Length: 213
Length: 95
Image 1: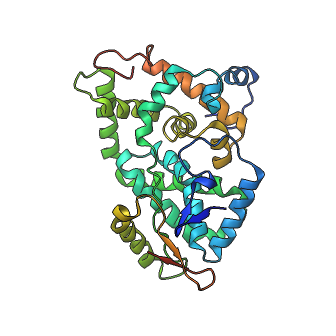
Image 2: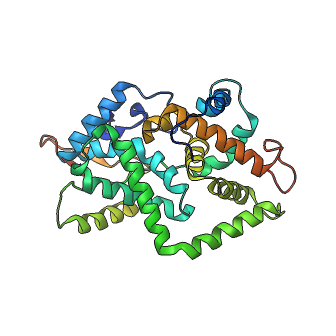
Image 3: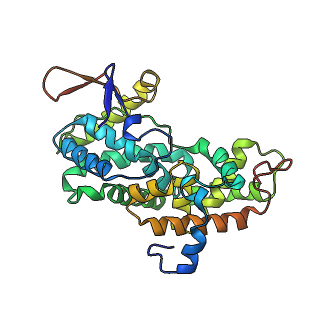
């Protein structure tokens, strides 16, 4: 359980910081079960802990599908919806997969409302990356690489974003999303293979005007 | 899209990606470079103020309140949940 210090809840103890989590022990799963039960009974701290535990995963899933500027609001929407529907969650052990499904659905809803604008934004930044625009700054390069990842097949893009952007390890991705270790591992491998192919050689030795490639 | 992992040859290849898998093994400079670049897009780690958990028609109002609380408290909370225990059993007060 998260500990309290000075009236605040320490989330680091619950594995909620940005440091990698190496594995998902049974105790973590049972903690989730307790927190879901507590949240159902109206315990907001318990729900806050669930938020902290799964927010990075939800953020990554959304980032794979919607523009960066929309992700934070949609993360809130996912958890608001989850909070509202928590009583309908039958298998509390599947919380991660449930939240992932909500995130994907909300991302799809977002696209049903605003496809043309997204397409335009994606086209612009990918074009900038491919031309090695000398005016592209560090942030622009990162955004362009992110867009290349977002051009990969969904399973690869989602898994790669969770690993490279959110800093989650493979075991953590598996634990949070409900995927098998084998699937995550293969998705990471194949996704990285495709990403290397798109970005070309010298990824770690950037040249002038294309520092990330 | 791979969801079932039925191809042993691909799995064998994937097994070599220890650094990609869990950060162990020999660091891959390409992946480290990507991590450094893309890490700036990571979730900010801030926990919003969780609204009172109730069901029914008040939901819309509470959703709005949660958003407002989040923006109002951003500068004050610095990414930490703003809870304060009260003596009244398991009830908590939102700061």
